[in-house]
Image (cartoon, rainbow over all chains, first blue to last red; front, top):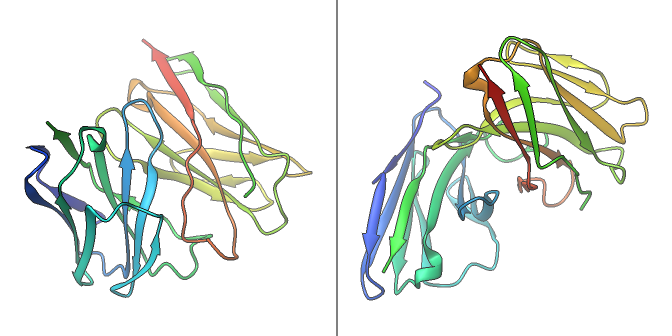
Length: 116
Length: 112
């Protein structure tokens, strides 16, 4: 099973709402990633977790709060977002994030977020 | 970080070979060349990677120039399902190796 699942598929939220995106993988991977992709643009890395510890935060605003409760799950908590945060949010996983020059990242289908 | 340059778009016909070029003139000796593609309404998927030698797998072939300043992804017999954005990415063994930095990619259109 090389599947990364993401829920929900679509999300509409107001600027005062709090919501969470969920990502799950059962490949035994120990590295997980969040990317943001605006329309017609390439994905941009937001966060990297390796062995359930945050290893990279690409200077993402604090209204995005990642959480890795265990090695299979990755959440992205959203609070007080702006309309410009509307995008496709992609989750990915890889073996352990240690030999990343060779590691394949497996991506989920993404959550399409619209902030009103 | 070493950068890659790809054509914005390419077009080919079904059942014909496709050669997708990538220039990376500032590549370092430890940079691996990775290719991912993103089909419409899906997340990116891994295609192939290599360091110096040409590589083949069930999806594609990767031809790497002798000076490593360019590479070509080869789809031997394109199908409609190969229509996607193809990204050429350099990955270093050093610091920041966890980052997968996507460039603008090449949008490949396959005509029936």
